[in-house]
Image 1 (cartoon, rainbow, N blue to C red):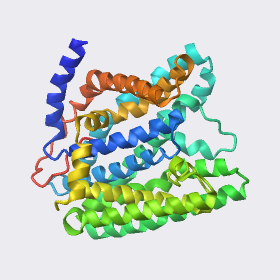
Image 2 (cartoon, rainbow, N blue to C red; image 1 turned 45 degrees about the vertical axis):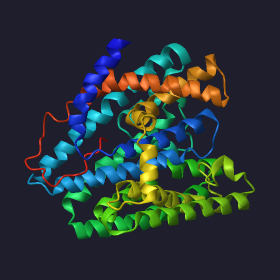
Image 3 (cartoon, one colour; image 1 turned 135 degrees about the horizontal axis):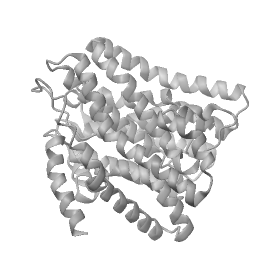
Length: 395
């Protein structure tokens, strides 16, 4: 065990060089909140943890758009910047993702004895298109890979947005982002109408809207508005966050009252809800609320809200979880499957035990497996000039 932690310490020192000076600890803390929400929902203790995935999308939008905008300012050709981006993203995302798919083949073969179900989905999982086949009326989920739909959404975001950032002028990019903010809700309405016309159930409609990539383009864009418009320098972040927090809470309360639900079990944001047009407004309100929190954390203005939230999210417990949140998200379903079989303690203390197991596996995976690839990110496609780059948060 000492060997694991000593190797992890050595690699952590190397990783700090890869991350860069612009690393913001509290963003990792925010990732921890996001992944904890997901785990609580899948464990069965809370119903609004789906918002954690939404938070991940907004964080990705902020970080990726910021990085791309910074690198666009350098003296490197666009073709080089695109190769650099996909090289670095591949090293961070692909190794663990494809390792998990290999692991699932073994699990389904020897423990679940239903390899056919997994194999039928494998072409879509391998190509990050698993989320797109949900619209098929005959689609059936394959349990231990269900959660990979969100990684498909992320990958499709990576496929499209670098071209928008690099090939559009800043003014046209701003216009494009404003367009997407309106387009995504309209897309969700259109998809809802299509599904209703084809007699999908409420559950089916909500699920299809939830997993389709254009439904979340506005989440990425909302996070990207901060670096694109330099909002961290221009607006009162504390006032903005309180405003969107109020809107978020009030909207949830009203929705819970109309649906006669217990607000505290799901904050009025039930997962894949379609009643009261939740598919239209809940995504948008949540996106802006989460972006406002990020804005507070990265704002150049000092405020009580920034100091308090940054201090909390920068604590060791939150940053440690946030750094391995990708692994936690990847591994948590398969661990939960065996937890339900062999341990079956579904209390809060049971969740603590489950979380510690997931965290332990993810920690070891990060330091002994993932970090080997992360450390390769700085070896090739080095920027010719990077004096303007400030957004080096590890993604």
